[in-house]
Length: 393
Image 1 (cartoon, rainbow, N blue to C red):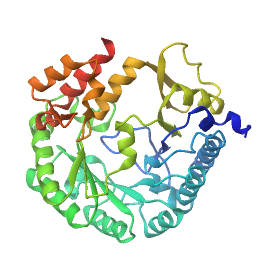
Image 2: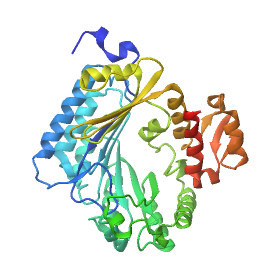
Image 3: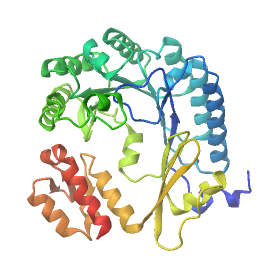
């Protein structure tokens, strides 16, 4: 570690959030296009990978990049597949490197979220667990390529709630075999199990996945835009009636149970991604410090570049530099995913755009903030597209 004058914090650099990617899973799901690979449960590569990731986290801490980090998220893939020892060690390493972290989330799947894993997460200092449930209907789970059963998901969710961890459940709609009744059952059963947070997503059939190979670009009735909208509308009603308020386009939470890490993404907080497939977003000062950790990264352009986006893969990395206007437009677009919206003053250079979006019924201006309307939620692509166009003006 260099002298204190070389540390990120002394230069106004550093991140507020850390994302750690675990790219292992038992089997790729039929819809999955994430950076993950099917891996044997006893494959030694998982231990080697965790060791490398822990080393990178420690190096980032030595550079001062994590001194002001307040949220951390271990995603995948399937982090719970690492088992209690490896995952617990990773959580402890994050705790040691990020002394100010107040929220630390680990993703898990019902088939590998054992009692030992849950106990070790609690002991190591995790605060949240996000469980990939997707459905509580066995026929739907098979169609999605999930390896757990509905009964197992229910039992594991209840076990997670019983540990005292904050528990989130991911659910998916507009999927094969799903009806409005089965969707309603999944929603209500999930809420009844006591989770404090639910995220709901319409299925996206991505190129290169088994579902795409099966259906291609055909218009399948169970995944139409109208069905997606109806399912999301129904989720809104059921979850809000149960006391979970929507705070982001796809996320609902009981009071105080919203995910602070996800909100960091939507509110322009700088974040560092570690591991294969992990993404980062940081300002120019922080990027210059990160280059000491990843010396092969390109030098940022001189001039008005104000942010850098990065994503790492096994052999190379993608780096994109944003100028001030692009960074501003992206912050507006991401901020409008939140129910509280964005301060009107942030739109000082885009008043015609706000007026147009108001006229189209996609946003409203209340108490000095521009907020998405109900139609803005349902027509999110139109809203976000209009805001991103500001980057090119």
